[in-house]
Every structure is written in C-alpha cells, then in structure tokens.
Amino acid sequence: MPSKTRKQHNFMAMCASSKGRAKAKGKCPPKKVAKEFMKADKARTRKRKR
Image (tube, rainbow, N blue to C red; front, top):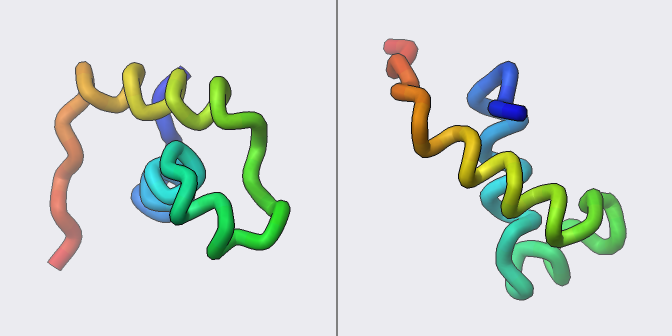
C-alpha cells in the first residue's frame, strides 16, 4: 500500500529506521508495516510541490 501524502511517506520512512523510531517515541506502526510502505513507494514517483 503506497503512501497517500508526502507527510505520510516521510513519517513511514522515519519509522522504518531504529533511530527514527526512537525519535517518534512510540507513535510508529510496527516496523514491518513501515517497511512495506517504503517498498510500495519505490514503484511510485513523487511529484515535488514548490
């Protein structure tokens, strides 16, 4: 399941790493879920907002 917004993408990217999970203080979904989002996002291209 790919991310719906850039904010969600960035949050899942943070939650996929151990350092980011510590920074989020328990607000992250399971690590497996965050990694699935990152894998799904690799197939999509993100358009930059200016």
